[in-house]
Image 1 (cartoon, rainbow, N blue to C red):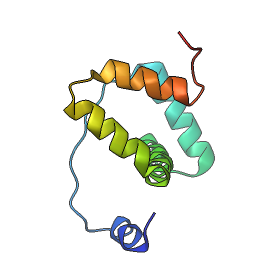
Image 2 (image 1 turned 30 degrees about the horizontal axis):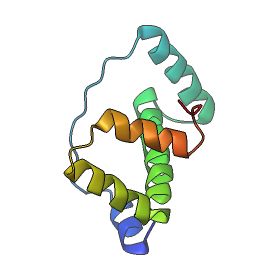
Image 3 (image 1 turned 60 degrees about the vertical axis):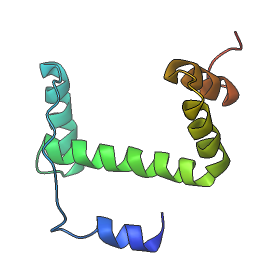
Amino acid sequence: MKIDKLKQRLQKDRPASSLTINVPDDVVDDLTKVALHLGFRDYTTLVRAYIGQGLRTDLARIEATPEIVNLVSSLRRQGISEEIIATAIAEARGLMEAV
């Protein structure tokens, strides 16, 4: 991640949006248990940490492969469906067997 973007992410007063998701009660119970075990004050803080960690990982992967990003953009402009693009990317990364 570029240093300027990292500095922005560390600012406490940056604008935020509220996000609502439905999560099963047993998952919330598990999140609460893990949050307390890891020293988080509540499960929502843990969920934000999980989102941030996953987002940083995915952004780093995307930034490391700009040619893939450009290819996907080109395929979308040509009308290729998201399902076909996702299947092709997964297949190329070896995440699923060749069809």
